[in-house]
Length: 118
Image 1 (cartoon, rainbow, N blue to C red):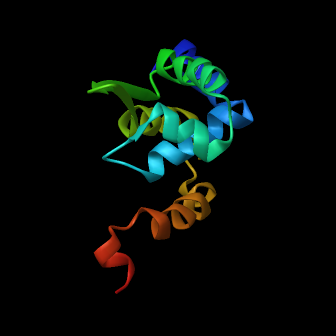
Image 2 (cartoon, rainbow, N blue to C red; image 1 turned 180 degrees about the vertical axis):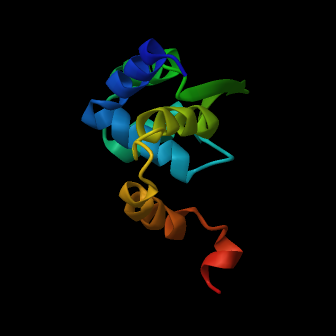
């Protein structure tokens, strides 16, 4: 990932409503949510939510697909993973013990649901 792409994605997430919208969409993967449901859940006017979704889409963090009369939005988790990896790649500077706490903190939330209960 290029620095400019990372800045665009991080800038898109650097606003409370957009961050919450992205988190909401991530929680509803893979089915996604219609724009109206996102606006209702976050208690944001639909025209305002449309602007926020446009910014997230421009940053490549979400995708949209028309389904009948609705536009359904989905989080692009692969793109978000690239942004996260851009931030932490080479974080340890050759000292893996510096990143070990971060990796350990991520593992419980990233286990498949059937493995998380083992």
